[in-house]
Image (cartoon, rainbow, N blue to C red):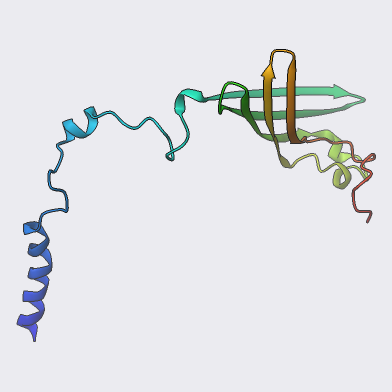
Length: 155
């Protein structure tokens, strides 16, 4: 039984080395790197029509004996489907690493200042001529206006 186990392990190690792959012609690394790619990502996205922009902002404000720091990062992705049709995606992250407003009674839970918030939006724009544009979009923006939120659930 021990010989069978050793022979089986040896077979598993050596047998794949003598097998060839399913390619009729195995390309060399040089051929694989120098061959032109199709140019499409995921089969339908053209990288020439794709652009991405990043922005970072850091702000500090002080008033009434209190202060607050707000950082935000926004990634904007643009894709031009055709001459009149384009898509824009905005993905953002906002963080408040420091706020002395949290020391005020009743405001720390209401404003939730020391949390990270995600925001973003999408916009599909159709511009058939220079003077005509149809835009369809949705946008979610961060904000700290706790007292005026007409659709929030009351506790």
